[in-house]
Image 1 (cartoon, rainbow, N blue to C red):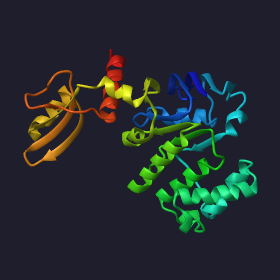
Image 2: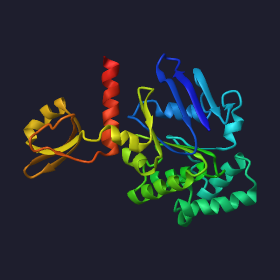
Image 3: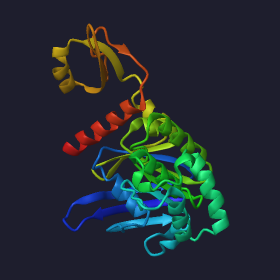
Image 4: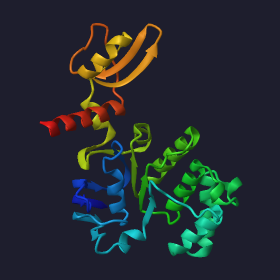
Length: 293
């Protein structure tokens, strides 16, 4: 169990990255959603014991990870947003080096690495220096290293950046498979990644927790509030000022708009099933309005 209790991170320049954030997680995949700059990476770095909170407590199975960081580090898999590699090592050498650093016995590490290279589809290039890898290939190496010790707590920060569509689907499926008896935290601003894998969702904005619920509950909150209809291109700017628009699609006869509204916004507007992106925009918008008030 991971317990985050009233955690605040204040930097030396006075900027508050995370503000009184509280969350309790058991096994499953948590999708941590928020815009760029919302505080997701700051929170992930604290959970991974890379940096310490200014205030508050983080507990892993009842143990304080600030005063006893090794209790979580031994069971932690972490893929940071700014993951780097040693360019002169190949993928096998790099993973062997990290396995040794994690204290994994050599024979077990060798078997694990062989399996992971197949899992992330790098077997054919595993002996090439990492300096010649594309961004997506390096990201797949990053995913492999996060899984080296079969972690009980897996933290991945913007993991699908640079991955092609097929690789993204493979990674989402992998997260779903891993979620059985461990805590997985997927931090991203891409709603579709969370929609495919998460059993719970936490939305963060400006360092504060907006909402923490299963996806089904978030979708229920916008049931009956999502509409689609066609408007003239010239009317689009004014419409965005009046309604919360979650999508637009150009058509030969105008722009098909998807928007949130309590009542029918136009005579030809049709009510549609909500998507997670609709719910995300709804909760973020409400939080913004409450903050302004």
